[in-house]
Image 1: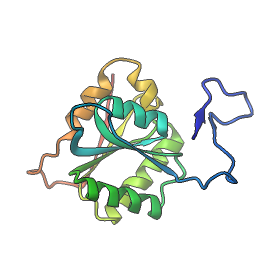
Image 2: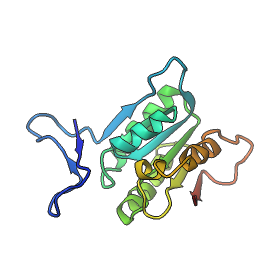
Image 3: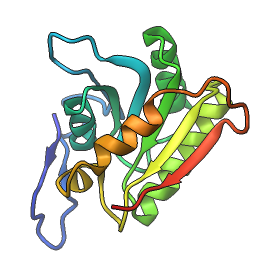
Image 4: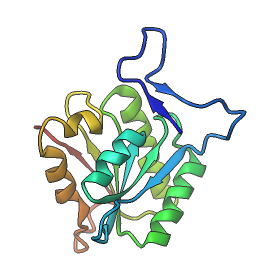
Length: 168
């Protein structure tokens, strides 16, 4: 369980996590669409936080939320890499918040995923300092961005990491 405060008090974080005495922080939350249709297995979207993972799932993508921009480390990357292999995805799309912490965590995760053998990683950066959930509320740019990055172009061998700065 994790709560996200819509308007946190000035001295509080936007997330309210349960006490560690109840359970260890898993640092990642796996999600998948609940629908009659099989979710697209061509990509796995990795987001910063559960709320953003749920936005991705609503768009029909298998997703994993990293529970904070500071959590990407070798263990998190290894768990995501192993999950991607088990699911059989061809591409991992990393979409963290477009603030300093999110950009730092996203870059770190992309490097770590490459180190874990994920060959096709795409970094999608929301515009104007937005989180994915905020970006999604501005129109259909998120769906268009993911649709453009979700299907690997297997003929392209230029780079394992491609950054897309997307404008609304």
